[in-house]
Length: 179
Image 1 (cartoon, one colour):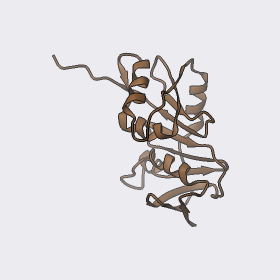
Image 2: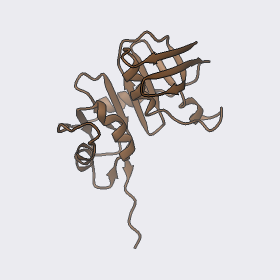
Image 3: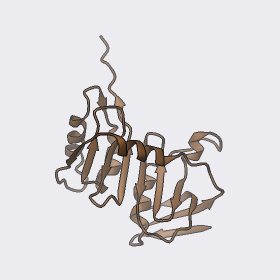
């Protein structure tokens, strides 16, 4: 089943948010292939590339299943229902984050496209040996106004105040400088 979702439709922003975290498949085997789809459930759209997970909690009229993105533009997104794919267990990521003690802080207001300030706020809250991929953070920041970080290797969690758009991003270890 082929669907085109146009700008202004309920699911349009959710699709845009999740497409940013989709994996790229090199072939039709292995874990990278399973991550090259959007997983759609009732009231949820999910994607992951293995380093980050985007979850949009929105009411939509898209049938549950795995979808490949056929076309993605500023005004429309076309998706194609695929045979069921074994999408990774995203619930375990969410569950582990819920059990972790976290520092919570509001991100200061920032203008459209101005992400270096909030990104710096997030990284400064992290352990000294950890950082966050800038491109992963900037894909989620347009939708977030809260950040929850840990003092360990657990994912950094970004969300809007209603938890409509949620992003879980794995931190990276900072490489030591060569002597």
